[in-house]
Length: 194
Image (tube, rainbow, N blue to C red; front, side, top):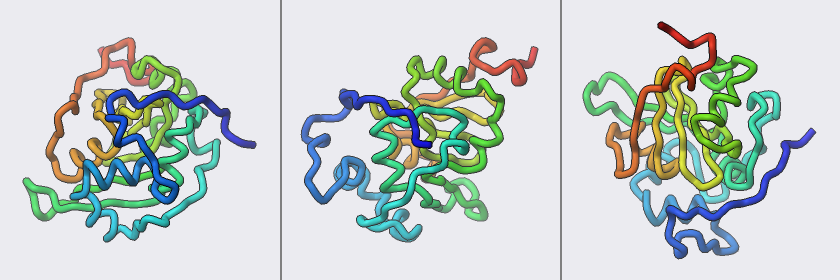
């Protein structure tokens, strides 16, 4: 069984020149090379190459989120890559970002979690595309990334998946990255603490 499909929407936060795709280069690879070239060494050391291509995750692994075209493009080119970088404040630790769908999504598993993610994102066009520590990154159809802590304590917004990756790998927020606690109403009942 395939994923339900949605239509593409414009990526308004990116310039038109960055949205133009060549035949051999994906949108995300162009974004990466034009705005985040410093991530290329981490990707290369994780085994990523320009011809990297993977299958999409099984529908049951995604808790019923609807795959949209932008998420599919990203997952096909960048899924199953684990990025690592030394932690700036403690060299004995390593910061990590998994591109693709991994454990924290499964641990967020109240059957109705997609309802709360959609409520926070204010759209139903979100799809999990990365994880780090105990949070899951959801790519919105407009290109932004919403990250939610698996225990539903807080969330962050980044202008795109690579801005989020930069922040979590190098502990440095780029302009447009914000965080906030989740309200009582934004949490599944199982995660509401008084």
